[in-house]
Image 1: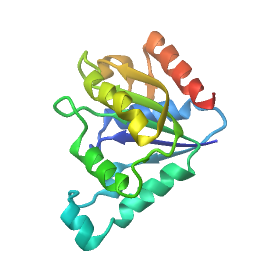
Image 2: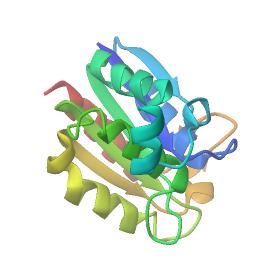
Image 3: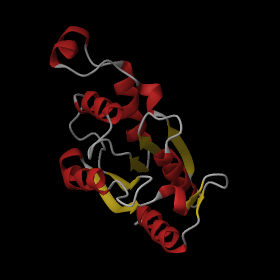
Image 4: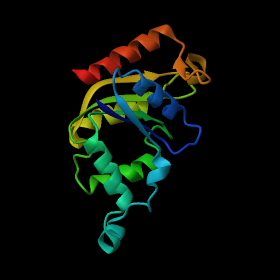
Length: 175
């Protein structure tokens, strides 16, 4: 099984990347590829740019990586209650290739934040819009208070209840 994981964030210290990476490590017998959105930076999407210059190679590569995966794990960072600008731009460009960006891949959608909200607003948006973009969402999970429940040195969730929920969510990718 090939699992593609990424944080919907461009932060070099992304807690969502830590969470996505940990979740992907829980998929048994899988080849995991963790993407960094910084490797897919493109000009801000506009129809004028698309008409003048076409769709950037980075968007095409991103779409292809999703197509090659057997499952996708995304952990959403929340900026002002919504998607990060970095993720939204990559998503906008990629959706110009095919609105069904996620190509019916089994998906685990995650979100975390330092506070007790756990980025639930953006996670709710992602889950709600999933059918429009061909996300086969098998599970979703918000992880609140990241620094209290995650051991960054070990790279693991130290909250037993959340860890059990995450393992169950990861297991659902195979069904």
